[in-house]
Image 1 (cartoon, rainbow, N blue to C red):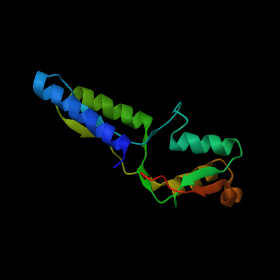
Image 2 (image 1 turned 135 degrees about the horizontal axis):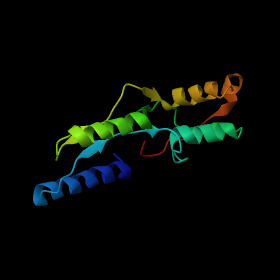
Image 3 (image 1 turned 30 degrees about the vertical axis):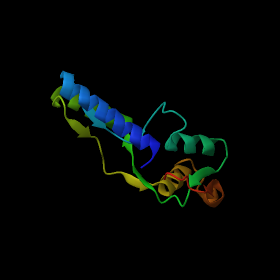
Image 4 (image 1 turned 180 degrees about the vertical axis):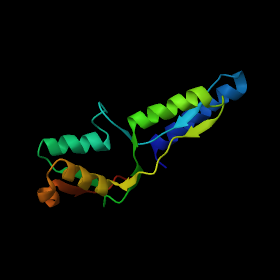
Length: 133
């Protein structure tokens, strides 16, 4: 695990403790790698898109073989709406999908979508993996 994952787990435990101790009506949702319009530019898809739009190569940590399940923001919003209206207080809901792809696959896909496939090799840069990946 890494500090980011540990803080997410810790926040869940705090929320659950308030539910159990004080009957605070909580519902926990777990969604990951949400993408869509107006996303913060540090996230993978907008980061790569911005790098490519500026003519810069995308930066991939390690081999790019790490996989992630990407969820479109409107799908997550529909899941939130469903959970809000049908979920049970005190429960945890995982919001997932079937769109798991490697970071390298995402990079190559974005390069193709942006019409840069002929320059693919020069538009991907590999850097040492982060210690917590």
